[in-house]
Amino acid sequence: MFREIEELLPNGFHDAYLQSAQINFEDSTVILNLKVLMATEDRPTSDPRYEDRILRFDGVSIAHFDPSFSFFNSKNPNGLQMDSTEVRQADIDKFAREGHRALQDGFWCGFFIFESNAIIIVNAQRASLSNKA
Image (cartoon, rainbow, N blue to C red; front, side):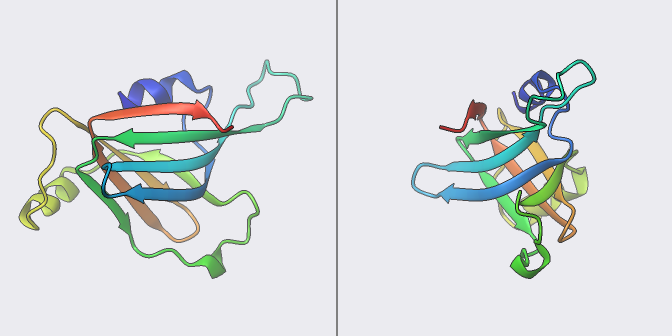
């Protein structure tokens, strides 16, 4: 489900910017407010290169943000530069050893945050991408 969303974007989540993250433990949701790179070779240069999007994960079992983020290191007004990344089996195994229960019918996705050399990993049932209102 997450990969299908990423494939619909002209550049996937490559060079996207994380503006904010919301975790709702009661509803088991994670919401990432992003600026997504929409520029392509055929897109008119008058169009904005980045567009605001909301990436929402529902039915979240695991939401891992590692290590902590430093606001001091974030000088870009767009947010923290990120790219999607594969979730390593070693990370999945570590969550299991720590007693976290991954969803058998869910998916894994990861994001690498450049400024702080950090990783975000999510295990969820559903993902959706929408325009920011």
